[in-house]
Image: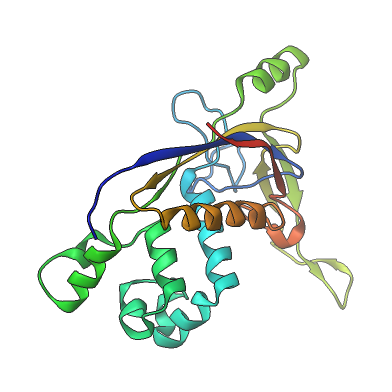
Length: 235
């Protein structure tokens, strides 16, 4: 494959929360008066945002499930969690696996050397899709400030003993979340190296549609993380 960049396509839109969103910060330190399950926030502004890695991971997992690549990867490598990699591609040689790897990428170390594995990895070319962090939409944030809308809220949750019908001892948690209705700027760029990459771009768009039927972040089975993307277009 001759690596020659033809163009970069930019997909932009407005990501709107249809339900509360929780993407954890990973901060396990409990502060006096604080929540024990905080959300991720920008370190300078302390405003919530959606990491591009969360968007990428959700779209990738949904496309891997839809194409059957997740099952193949798990069968070949149970400890790998069902994520497509070069090792899976070396075994199945499936076009679906190649498509996933071209769109979302794989470890750069797989391209090192002159082994059959490295040669096969190099033939796939560079990662096509790049996912930007989603920051609060300026217009919506200005409206929120004017109307004194909170940028984050806290909700107390507990586990219920299904036999006794009461809360389980020690299960009370205080979870921080971004409230439904918040708007973020959504942006993904996609590199076109050859004409066949147009098919991969359409596959990515399908993944974005699937994401809107699922959820992002934590506690999706409880109804958190439902989203829609308004005015998605190529810029």
